[in-house]
Length: 171
Image 1 (cartoon, rainbow, N blue to C red):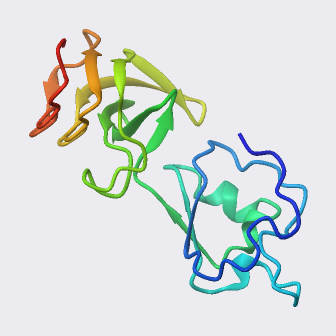
Image 2 (image 1 turned 135 degrees about the vertical axis):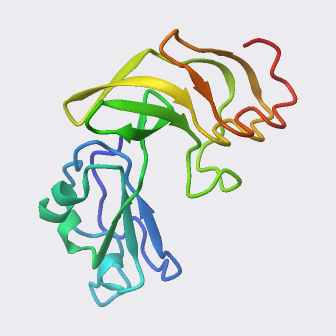
């Protein structure tokens, strides 16, 4: 929920190559100074820096002030609503599945922990999606997951969906 990034906030961090912004709309940023190395250069002027944004938002980031300065914007194939990651299964049928958070199940951006309640539907980008499945590897290796509540709309559980969830006690 960052709303302001001030001058030199990420100064002299030339090793930054990835920036993730998972907001459904590009947040307003009051200054373009992500980095300051004495030459007033911005972090995103480095052609190696890639901005990763959620499913369906690339164009809005590409045209938004500040965010449009990133030389490379990559749209991820998932999005996050209320701490749960989803992947669209069908735009036509408006269905989605619960998925892992990150580029791969073993590269978690945020591991699921505690008690998770999956809703029967969610809204993303102004569209309502029915949650119909738990995707492959969705909760795999989430060792701090205690319980999961699935709605009646979920009719399929993918391969290894709850594999190695050693503290899962209730489904």
